Length: 323
Image 1 (cartoon, rainbow, N blue to C red):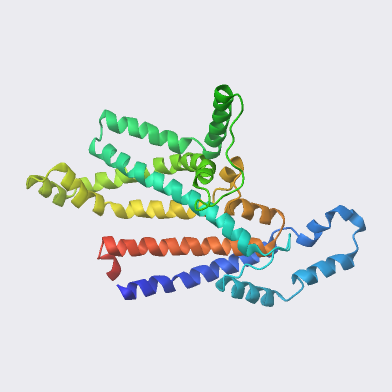
Image 2 (cartoon, rainbow, N blue to C red):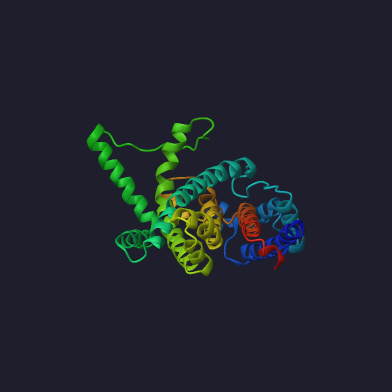
């Protein structure tokens, strides 16, 4: 088991290194110059010496190999450095935004697990009956409706309802507050976005759960367990759910990793300053430092979650560790 863990961790290194090479090269290939963006108000009268001074101050005139080595060194030491656009230390800002994105992803994932797995099990058990049809209609609607559109509709509904009930529109807090400081304000800001985001992933996970359970229900050992007289609850708990959990865990792991950094549009709808919004702004401003560090941070998160998912495979199915 320890050998399997070490191998999986070592396999992260070429993945992270390859992602670093890719993002470093892409940031220098795509159009955009942060120095030109900074001094764009000067128009055509901009002095070339000003641009050269800006590039020298930001280290953009160094050889590419030196820039790449410095980038890798800061990445593996988790040193985020200073923003090229604002000049501020990005460590504290990234920590705050990462805390928001992580909590939002965790809340959405919790709602997904608590809702999708039971619904998928019910749909599989009652396959072809009215319970199955109702759940499938819900899952199709959840996949078809975009989260950002649903978020806009929810916000409009809240504004109209609060206006009629209290005479003034209700809006959630704008500034992120840690749940350890003020739990009520924290939940008031994140509970609605987490529910809206979770609806789509509940639908996806429910369909995967239903498919996985239906496949296990056809296995001979499930039929033998029923023939021995075990009740359905015991059969589902002991034989079906555990053996059908591998594809479900895969979907949940990928969803959680995506939720941390991939909710750019949804964060804009709910005015949330998460990792996705910061990444979008850094790309718009051609801020190499922030963009590269955020992408590498997300790569590390993805890789770590994949390792955790693989280790859960080895725990649930001992045959995996010998592959």
